Image 1 (cartoon, rainbow, N blue to C red):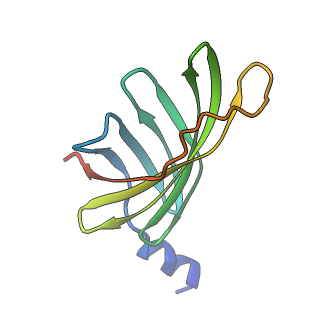
Image 2 (cartoon, rainbow, N blue to C red):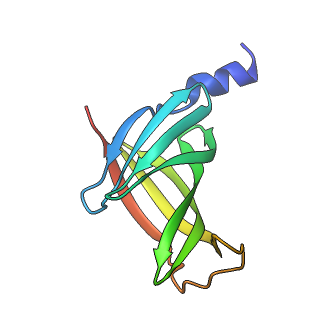
Length: 123
């Protein structure tokens, strides 16, 4: 058996809908081998995940979404990294950048804290 085939067999299964007790959003992941697609669903919008990677029980992806800050609309890139711990998915999110949607200029939102939270897969 080749190394690649073995790695695919050992990859964790992230497919499904994941929700958290303390977060106001959910994720739907569709996994085919080590390829991952999906969406993040929030109170006001849904956002496609991009640049997703899976390596064993580790996951990484980016959300690019528009957010309102006062009278401005900013486009934010948010990186999520995480891993499966038992039956839960522990994710850490961190804002990589935020730019003004109209001009592309950097938007200093002052909101760049890392947040870590856990999600459970719906049956």
